Image 1 (cartoon, rainbow over the protein chains, first blue to last red):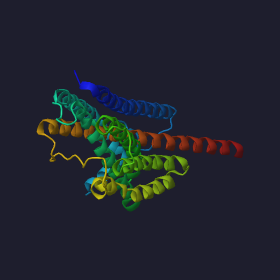
Image 2 (image 1 turned 180 degrees about the vertical axis):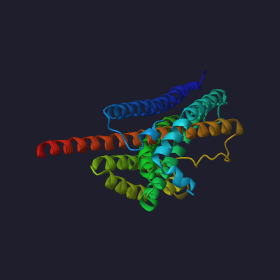
Image 3 (image 1 turned 90 degrees about the horizontal axis):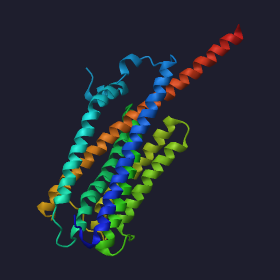
Image 4 (image 1 turned 90 degrees about the vertical axis):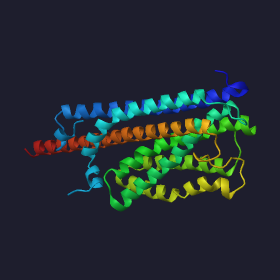
Length: 57
Length: 250
């Protein structure tokens, strides 16, 4: 794809967008997994919420 | 009979609903972005900007989302302070880092568009400067919240700052009208943009907006899980200390 003499600015913009969006998604997924693991570990020790049975998703 | 907001106010119900919706939202976001990128690749060059007009397809949606995310933070903050909605603080906290990221993206892509268009990466222009202040406002909200140990107090103080900061939105929006700036007037979908360029812009704006709300929903789930972990850990500490007290009494 020929983007002309200013191609570097176009590629850099989409590169920045890819880094920001991929970074956000990776952070959200890793954070969610970490929280869920800690919650599961606590519940495995018998420490549960009153509504735990209804809230598992 | 509960109203819809009352039904959605329950974090457990939110977790059930969002757990069912999220996989579909990720798929819809991916499909819309793929469609948008196809339209970006096949879009013709602009008669003035040439191929650098393709930067507009990511810059304008990022700028739009940066303001929309702040409106969401402020509306959630209002919901916390006035209606004490249980999910309002979760929503405000979840939206702030996402809004900051999209504001940074708007600034970076704007700067990269500015160099070939204006001959410079940055000028202290009213639009650019007001968006930079919005970015710092997001960072301030995040820093204020994380600097306070008491989460309830942190939520309320952050909410007050978020509501005060909403003044930035009309300043950003009308900065190009109120002051003589290097930045062009706002790019609207009904503006002078040629239809061949307007359609990819519209699809990319929809795609990134759907992606934003998908990420926001995921971030809200993470925050609810974090609060559950914290409350369970407190319960565990209370349980072990009461057990220790009982043993000491024996």
